[in-house]
View 1 (cartoon, rainbow, N blue to C red):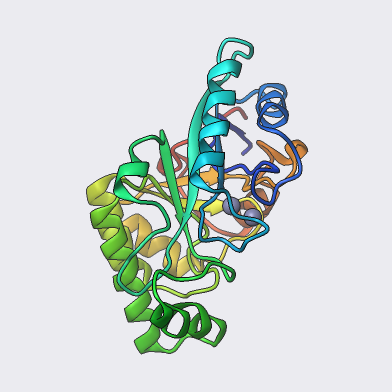
View 2 (cartoon, rainbow, N blue to C red; view 1 turned 30 degrees about the horizontal axis):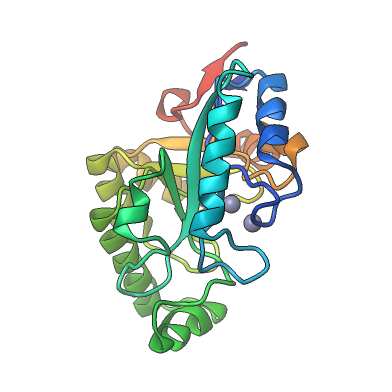
Length: 242
Ligand SMILES: [Zn+2]
Ligand SMILES: [Zn+2]
């Protein structure tokens, strides 16, 4: 079976660590036949070179407003926010959060924390392998963030910091938060996929494109789906065409 991707909710521009402009991504989305594309640069706590500050995000928003009439693609103003502490803090404020159409949440190696303590309990600790206890702590941080912020997508779970997918998927199902199958890397076992499905959460496929030509092309996911089973109706942004 083959599927057509209808939307790509996770793409980067050169405003963070991508290579193209907002327009390059939109044009590429149009050419890939997508109905919707989100521009989701990295949040302000990402490392100095590759972060996007809030005023820079607002430049992206202004560009999106201009492009809306130029391309027949729905464009969402988004952010890939970072989880930055065991308390479930993310790197934008509740006030700033309101400006975005879509918030993708992820963990990465580079972001600094909210406080000095977070450097040790979050950033540094995430560089070491996960123990069972650590997984529980990180899982709780996700649950807190999901409860207190308007998150729509959990990006590449298990990257940098391993989690217990079951409680996360249960809350995701309750809050209609989608679990991403990331176009660059997928870190789920079939057992974890089954736990997410059993919990009632749905998946979304995103490219996580850092180059315009990768928008709408989540190659790692198509590969993953050759060897893992997910019912297509549980993936929110595909259409079957064969
Ligand atoms: Zn990046
Ligand atoms: Zn990303």
